[in-house]
Length: 328
Image (cartoon, rainbow, N blue to C red):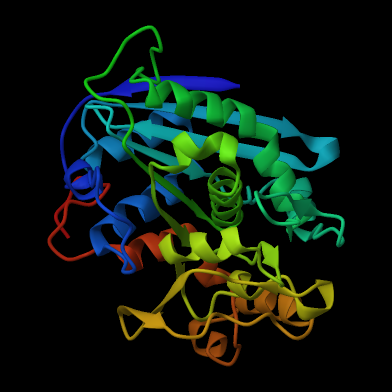
């Protein structure tokens, strides 16, 4: 299902920070971009009008946005993607929604890692084993998302494809929180690793994820190694989800540049988060969610810190306009 919207207004520095048309991918995160995309990922859980309003408040004034969604309960498919197109058309954000808290089948799909047969085929490689549940959600909306990106590449307005914008898409960002982060990674990998999508892949500036679980296994394909140079993962250390799936479920791993929230600052980590050794950490982190703040410190992980608002709060730079329209 496609839901379009067109929002006017002005607030934060979103468009200026994101519009890096023609610039080469960098090996360092941009804190303002991280804040904009982290907020985008947080509000990807909202309805289309709320999402559009929040993007406007961040500075993406007079933008066009589109929601693409596919839900099939029996197949554990809960796939929602938001596309945001800047007023001029040069910048597009693709943001995936994470696991919906009230949808039990969504959680079941997150646990379906699949087998060695669950592979993503890439150019010049035999492919790479991927998380079956995450990849199925990417595939559910893949054709619709790619179609809209091609329209943006042609200079069409996403909310009204019969109209043109000033410029075709030149810069694409892909982002997501939790399951949405894993879907962002897999989408970018499929896009950049297949020759038929080279024209779209050439616009991919970076992938920013927040509280993202592992989505691919070793050994890594060459395309995954290349994508890692422009993937920026954000992790709050007490968040269990980036350490999943457990070791017993397969040799899953992280790629890209990892930034951990330590001492109130996002610091680059030279070693990625490791898989949890046992499944026992999952119920323990759930118990910690309901513990008092004092007792919560006794647990290594807690699902409490996985909530998207914790990431948005931690990502917010000082002196910028928040999604609430306030200067923080």
